[in-house]
Image (cartoon, rainbow, N blue to C red; front, top):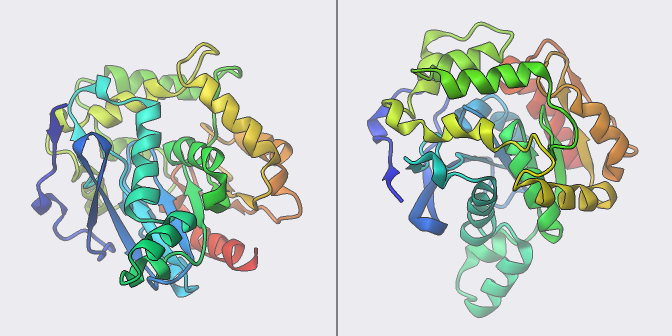
Length: 321
């Protein structure tokens, strides 16, 4: 596997994103990056971004979680942000992205409480394992962050306390995707030069300042670094016989009856995933009895348009359940 790593100087002077990067090794010799805010012994809330953004997307969400005493952990998916970038599109598969992210959360960060307790018993001098064993994790996923996060939650329910779905879904190929999504997929696949900042801007209702657009371009010095953003749309299951469809169907079977609080926090202006909100509310038992917010005035990237409001909604959900 040929792996590219974005030079650190590309990330100098990021606006409103003062968090020091942290790194961990995951399978296939890859290094994944993440940032944290809030107390180290707070309840962990994992923030998973989508296509083609990175953890910078959560810069307005993280302070709200930290202020509520929560440990916000914003991850860079493999191929994005400061994480390593396999240069060959064929190295990216749905299953691999699920496993890479699972390994970061439960093997490297020890957010699985049972794993942390086992480590603490075997190495009692390591206080960090004990400190992080108090709570299971809350998974927040938007766009591809949901496609990955919902799979992890379904496949490791014993490690998950709560789930937040924000402008995302879990496609199986049994229901057609909206035409606007196919247009987006074709544009990404065919563009001679993939304009990352323009794609993010297209999913926002607010106008992004130039320094913010530059921050979204920062992980990708040239086209060779963009295998992840290039390939992710083609990994979404759009036919029933897609290789990822059976695993997603199995995840649906778990999620529909899983006794975990499940918050649906969609924006009021996402033409790509908006239709998934009523399906999640109707199908997943964990949504029952909760107040599910509709984030006003926001597009697909609701973290950009209304990040502080989304952060407050997540914090209220976590602290009240």
